[in-house]
Amino acid sequence: MRQAPRVSATGSKRDPGAGRPALERALGHRFRNAALLEQALTHRSFGSPHNERLEFLGDGVLGCVIAEELYARFPQRSEGELSRLRANLVREAALAGVARALGLSGFLRLGEGELASGGADRASILADALEALFGAVFLDGGYERARASVLEAYEGPLGRLDPGEPSKDPKTRLQELLQGRRQRLPQYRVVGTRGAAHRQTFEVECIVEAAGAGEGRRATGSGSSRRIAEQQAAEHMLRLLGAAQQP
Image (cartoon, rainbow, N blue to C red; front, side, top):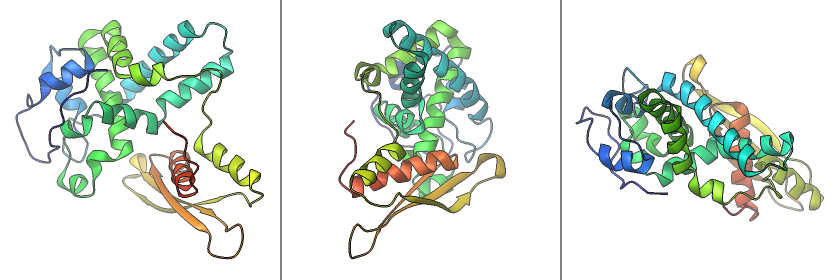
């Protein structure tokens, strides 16, 4: 996958063409309508038009392209196996990983508050922007161009897939780890929310009791839903326990 050089995210008005050729090369698509690219990179904290509608469209495009690719690559796999593979590729953490490989955080248009709080590297913001980009490519060049961009961006993750051993989600891996150690199952609780009701970010804490004497472990995660935040908290807990899955 071609990687774009990293440039600085900004919360102020700037030349919308700055860095555009590098990002277009990384996507494998040159925009005819530069406004679509600019909108895809604009978080609602920066102003309007922002990327939420494009994100909605790109989510559908991404799901279709990944489903089509998995169907063609693994003709002997069942619907359930293909669904697990697709879910692993389009979850927030995977999207954010692809976005980071593209250097996307350097191109985002964020408000000053989001910049100050590290929004340029927040998984939810990166994932949303990547989906918005796919939606923008679809509107600018049609499905085949969007399909090519998705496959270009996902070249690495698709190449590393092992359909015989579909990845288990972090919560499942943490539960199995603790069961194997004869420890009590983890507890999850929401410790905070932020944002408008229709666009909330959830903060969740994962608590694992100590196997013997001493204090238990705590890890936190965040995401656009409680489920996503719990999965991130579980992943962080696995790292604390020295059992994180290698990429």
